[in-house]
Image 1: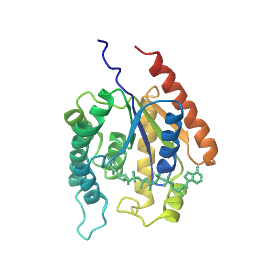
Image 2: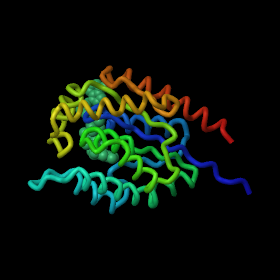
Image 3: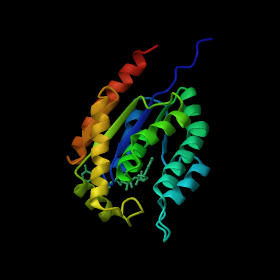
Length: 216
Ligand code: T5A
């Protein structure tokens, strides 16, 4: 009996309001049309318990959350998500399409909250072992554009309400990580009109599908 080919782990990232939700829907439809089986999920969240942790992480509250508490809650949710969703999905041969993963932790907690890279790296190794995304697609736009879009759409959550300097650090961290490993990251200009963003996304997905299909 031949072993089941493992599905790809594809992560969509970017700062606030860059269009992840909109483009995640596009990606799901694109994969469906190409006959690729996938499961879509998100972080923080993705399982009932991890979604409860998401509520705690994002809800505005009077007591400020210590950055270290935020970091550990994010990884607690991730540990649950990996074991109960991400790994089972890929082991069944489906792609796992995840709205945010550990690059968000490097960007928001490591850079935005100034906790630094080494703490996030230590937890990444501890919680994820060898698990890393096969491809991280970063939707990138100036922070003012993302903020305007997020504002126009809904009430801002605890992260979205942070100052522009915080969001600039987040954006810079994403771009720095992409520059360090260009074979695993795709940066897409999300300030372009949506139709152009989606043409570029489709090119990335076509390339991933080809590589995956041709890989034994
Ligand atoms: N977090 C997460 C951490 O701090 N650490 C971690 O480790 C992890 C995993 C999660 C929050 O948690 C934090 C980061 C986040 O703050 P989220 O829901 O994933 O929250 O992230 P948000 O950035 O808040 O997602 P949003 O849903 O608010 O924004 P999206 O999905 O990026 O934007 P979207 O698609 O809703 O688009 C916003 C508006 O812009 C329009 C859309 O139609 C929509 O109205 N739009 C465009 N308009 C013009 N041109 C385009 N190209 C457009 N693209 C979208």
